[in-house]
Image 1 (spheres, rainbow, N blue to C red):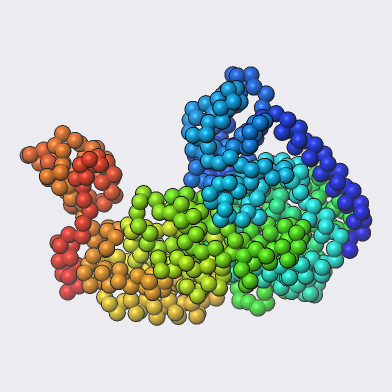
Image 2: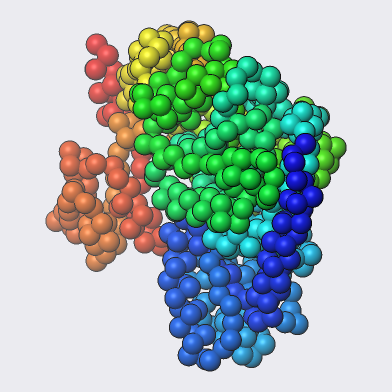
Length: 638
């Protein structure tokens, strides 16, 4: 037990009292929150803030305007929340240019809340509102994301006012073994993808010999379409810092690191500020809150190698070596950074720690499933209506996540598959949509939990091309150490490229399965062991698409460029319309003597611009797998 725990409680109580008083003062005036994480900024959040600032000044209003993080409703960005006395907090979405100023003027001057622009009226809950009345809110269970988008991530007082760092104070009054036992009892499994029990990892490091130990937060998020870790760091960085400090307390670490890829400039900026603020508040550094516990945390910026998400490759890069995985055992918990015992946890894993310490192991186990307790955070991307972040209890089905939280498939298209688990995940079809989201069920179905990336695919997506795309990514990101991974994935990629050109052979499918099996068996790290998953799962569930490419020289989804051609239907082409001509980047479209548009197949790069440009009332441009391409394919095989 830490010496001076009563001193820590008194010091924290003082910090929290001041923070809550300032929070209450903030709420004495109308309060406007604008989501300005990376997703919000890309949609114009900073311009929205400037517009609101100018309108408030023009109207002479006395309000507080704050830049906050992301609530997860990325599809509706820019998003803002307005607290106005006499009304519940109201969240507005799709706040385009001019709309923000109008809402502020109508609501704060005339008392008209502008319901037509509202996503939801939020229900006040202690200090912060919740989305319980919002349709998707009935399916979500926000733990890690509870305060994201509702507090200023650049102000430590907001985090403290809502109970932040209280778990650290509690942990300072616990022996390391007690902390570890709570985490073990909770059943928390690592959210970085492997799902290894966090408590066992901590216990291994705690029992490892040596007085010099380290803790590392792995924020090297590199999966295409994944942005969970980035959002947490941008929206509530102190939650991660607190979790890492508690981890250090539990295992006896002398130093902590947060490893963030440099491609996340806003996350880097906000976590650096959070560390600085924590030091100034006495929550980080020497004699934390007056106790004998010392720990400092340093920010380390990675260079963007996907393989550095693997813990031993990450450690190598921190030591100034190439980011190449090494054999295990020994595991980092026994011999990690500088050959010292090291605990490495993902951003999401560490973000659960303060909640578990505060509310207990039984509370955490009451959420989710028996073998996978807690929640899962997913980045919904692809052909889903409501893209963004969603935090749902483990055990939620894929169907509920995509249709209830994500609102189904965009543009009225038919669902085809969901690619889950990042580039090394699997593609699951309609018949697997009732699979519960947990580590074991997804693995059994041929996919994996991964770090939480989820890409929804529709009828226009070719599963052979999807497999090729993801394998191309992992093949390029391979460090090259293992022959199976280095050469095997390249051989598989070559075969897939041949198939997408319509020049494959039936035996290629069996060869892909054989190669995939050997690569999984012979690779050293998780990248190689999981890289074949997209290929294996698409062959398992969509074998007929591979056969169509091979036997018929046809891409059923009309996605593979070598197997399609664009034509303009003469009976539907409007002679006076030149929309397609102006849209073509290579000038492949011209008018014949009858003013009917014609596509020069030699010049056409199949970019789809002409189809997009053609007015919907005409629908003159069509995409086909023409017979002449089949003939060329057969000729090429001879």
